[in-house]
Each structure stands twice: as C-alpha cells, then as structure tokens.
Amino acid sequence: MGISGKLNRMGIQKKLLFGYGCFVLLPILVVCGFFLQRMVSSTLSYTEDLDRVYFDQTAANVDSMLRANFALADSATSSYELMKYVNTLHEFHPDEIEPYLDYGRIYDSCLVKFPITSGSLSKLSVYTTNPTILTDNVFLVSQKQTPLKKEIRERVMKAAGSNVLLDPILEDGKAYLAVGKLIVSDGQERIQNILLLRTPESELCSLLGRGDQQTYVVGSSGVVLSSNVREAVGKDAEEFPALQRILERMPDQPVRETDTVSFYRSMEEEPGVSWRLVSIMSRRPLMEKVTESVWLCIMLCLLSIVGAVGFL
Image 1 (cartoon, rainbow, N blue to C red):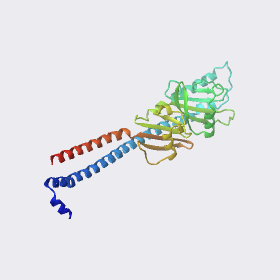
Image 2 (cartoon, one colour; image 1 turned 30 degrees about the horizontal axis):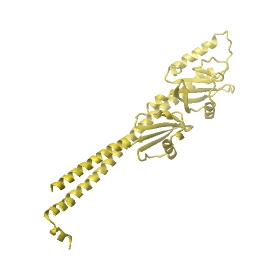
Image 3 (cartoon, one colour; image 1 turned 90 degrees about the vertical axis):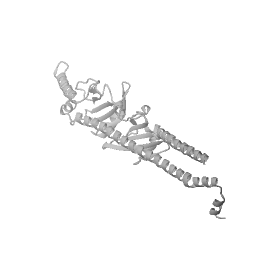
Image 4 (tube, one colour; image 1 turned 135 degrees about the vertical axis):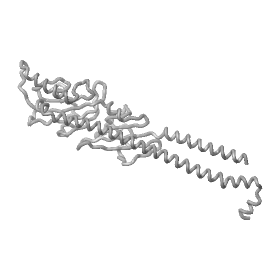
C-alpha cells in the first residue's frame, strides 16, 4: 500500500495534523533554526569587528604615547648646551660662583623644553659620572651617589646611543615607564652620561580601556610594561598562561577560544626597541545574552506549536 493509500485511510483529524506537521511545523522549524544560526553568527561577527576597531585604536594610542617619549628623549640628547655641560670636565672651585651660574643656565634652558621636575607628569634625569659638575639628584644625578641598576646600565650601554624601552621602574610606590639613552661624550671616556625619562605607567594604562577585556603591553624582554590587569605590571608574561599562549603564536588573525577572542600586534619603533600589544576579550557576557535570545525564540516556537496542535 502506497503513501496515498495510507493517507486516504486516515481520519480528518490525523490528516490535519500530518499536513500541519509537514507543511507548517517543519518549515517553521527549519526557518527558525536558520534564522537563529545566522543571528548568532552575525552578532559574533559584528562584535568582533567592533573589537578589532577598538583594538586598533588602542594600539595607535599606545604607539603615539611611546613615540612621544622617544621623541622627548631624542630632543633632550640633542640639546647642545646640555651635552656640552655634562661631557666637559670643568675646573671647579668652591669659592667661585661661575659653576653655579653654569648650572643655573643649563637648568633654566632645559626646564623650558623638558619636564624635569618631580612635580611634572614625566621626569627626566641625566645620570652622570662627571665629578666636576653640580648635581641636584633630580635633573642631574651623580651615578656615584645614586647608581643606576646594573641591568639598566648594561641595556643602555649596549644600545650605544639608541633609545631603550626599559622595564617598569618603581619610585615612590608608583610604577613608571622608562626610556633610557646613552649620551655619547666628546671623546671623554672617563665620563658616562645616561638619560632616563620616566612617565607614570598609569598614563599608558588609561589608554587600555574597557573592563570586559584584559590588555597587556609587553616589552622586548618579556616583562609586562602596562596592563589593566594591575597585578601583571612589572611581571614576566610567562606568569600568565593565556597571555603567553598568544605571545608564542604571534597570530595575524584573532584567536577564538571557548569564551574569549584575542588580538595581537607587534610594533618596533626603532632597531632594538619593540613592544607587543595583546588584548583578550571575554565572550561570556555576549554569549549569555545570545543564549537568552535563542531560548526565548525556542520557547515561543514551542508555545505556538503546542497551541496550534491543541487547537487542531
């Protein structure tokens, strides 16, 4: 007996239910499933595009701030008056006033150009081994009295006059981003001058933004220079598995995991100075909202089906 024969033997009620299931219920379920799948896919794609735009803007802001610091360091080391003063062995006599006048002129000329006082947003200092100039432990600092850390001195000396983006420096209970640069002397091998520019790390952190993401700026040494995950600042990236996975992959495209999507950017300002930006964005709040919408659609479909079948 064929299908037509079976249909002919059905009662009117069963025929209505069969027709409803085949020509109404099944198309509705297919269309609803397709719509839900497209809605979830479109929502995630649109959100990822927005996250990419936000990440690119963050990378541009970080790049702009670090470039400004490098430019300030370059400007300071190109100051002829300052370079001449710190690289010259002066005849210093305590009874003479001329050394104090020289120091005053250098300080005043640099104060106009550079943020060198402790009350400024950034602090610029020159650490010198020149024993014949006046030092104030703020702008001009004696390396004999206040020696630089060995790792800072070695990295700056190795760069041989290029800017060095150092690991965060802790001063007065605050973390500072630091740029170091060797001031090349005029043949005076006995003199070593190192410029150190410090900017509050919180200024860079303010550019990293939203609370639904974890953003890290990692230096070439693998130390976290800045992050909105505050406990990560100044620590090695290896201590944070999610961050380390992204750094090892160095992906060109977003990395999608169960509850997160991650973006990566590597930048090199000049030879030997590089930093990496990683942003790990949580998908859990978005997926919770999408799941709520999906379940609402399913419940409405089920109510419609049950109501229609009950009516028939």
